[in-house]
Amino acid sequence: MDILIVDDNQDNRMTLELLLEEFEGLTIEQVEDGEAAVELCKKQHFDIIFMDIMMPGIDGITATEVIKSFDKKVMIIALSALDDELSKNEILANGAEDYITKPIESELFHQRVKNYLEIVAFRKEKPSNEDAVNSFTQEVYSRSLKFTIKSKHSLAELWDYYLNEYRVSVETLEECIRMIYAYGQVTLKNDASLTLTAEENDDYLFLTLAPLGGISDLVIQHTLLKNYKQADFILSHHQLSFRLKKGQPIQENLERLDITDYEQRILSKTHFNKTTASEYVENTAISLMDKIEDLENIELSIEKSAIAFERDAQQDDLIQICADLDSYVEVVDQLMEFEHFAYALKNLNDFLKTLNLSELDPNDQKKFSRLFLHLLDDITEWRNNIFIKKEANDIHYLDSSLLSSCLQIQSIFEKKEANLEDEGDFELF
Image 1: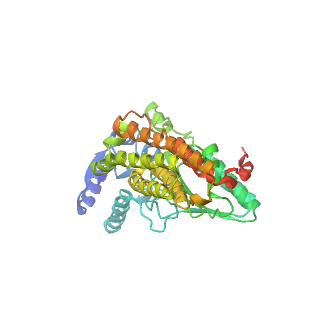
Image 2 (image 1 turned 90 degrees about the vertical axis):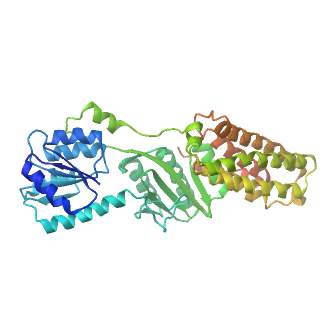
Image 3 (image 1 turned 135 degrees about the horizontal axis):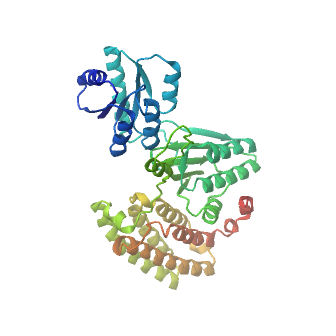
C-alpha cells in the first residue's frame, strides 16, 4: 500500500508515520501542503492519503476536491485539530471518506487504519457476485438497482434517471435506453410488466430486461439491428442483457476551484478506444491462437456440406453443418470480445437444428444455401482480417453484418415473424 501524509506540521507528520509502523507493507511519503500533494498525486497513485484540513496556500478541502477529480480510487482521510462540523461536512462532501480529530488516539487510529487497508485491498480485487442477473458475467458489484416497470410513469422515471441523473459517462447509453423504453411500451401495451436490473463493475454497466415473453426473439433481434447497431447484448430465455462500456464520471461544475489545464483535460477525457486486430491478437492467449488456426479447417468442412446441400438438399448435410457450427461456436465463445458474434452463430445454429427439410419449400432451401454461403465468406473474411492479416482497425467492424446475415437466414424459414408486424411499435424516436 502507498500512503501519503499531508500536513504543514513536521511533528504531526512524524506522529502519523510512527503510528503506521504497526502495519507491514506500507510505503509512506510526506508533503507539507495541499499544492505539493496535488502535484505528487498527478504523478502517482496513492492508496490512502491522510490530509490535514488547515494548511497555508491550498487547504486540505481544496486539495481533496482536486485530487478526487482525477483519481477516484484514492481514499482520503481528513485530519483536523478542530472538531468543526462545518469543515468536517465540507471535506466529506468533497471526497474525503473519513474524518479523524487530533490529537489522535492510537488504539482508535489503529482500528480505523486496519479497516481502511481492508477496504482498499478489496478495491483492488475484481468484484464477484454469484447472484448476478445479467447474462455476461458474475464479475459485478454486490449492489444492483431495480426498476419495476408497471406503468408509463415508471418508464419515464427510468428514462430520467439514466439520461438526466446518472453521473457516469456510458457509451451508447442514450440508444440503449431508447430501446428499453420501446420494449417497455410494447410490454405495457400487452398488459404485462417487466423488471430492469442494473449492475456494474469498473468497466461496464449491465442492463437486464426480463421477462420479455410478449415480444418474440426475432423481433427483438431485428429491431436492435435496425435501431441500435452498436448493441452488445445477449438474448436468452426471454431475458435481454446489454453490456455498455463506461467512461469517466461526469463531473459537476467545480465553481470554487481554479482548475488547471492538466486537470481540465482529465475531467473532459472519455475513454472509448477501439481495439485494433494487431492489439487484440497480441493480447490473446497462445492456447486460443492454436484453436483459431483450426477454424480454417472447420470453415472448409462447413463449405463442403453447404455446397452439397445447395446441389441436393439432404438432412445429413444439414446435420453436418450444425455439428461443424457447434465446433466453431465453441472456439469463438472463448474469445471474450466476440460474445456478440458467438451469440449470433449459436442462435442460428440452434434454429437450424430444429428444421425438417421434408416440411420446407424447396425455393426456401435454395435461398438458404445462397445466403449461407455468403455468410461463410464473411466469416472467413472476419478470421483473416483479424487473426491472419491483422489489418482490421476495429475488431468489431463486422459484428453488425454477421448478425444481420444470421437473422436473414433464420427469417427465411420464419416468414410470419420475419414480417415483424410489431416493429411499428418501435418507431418511437
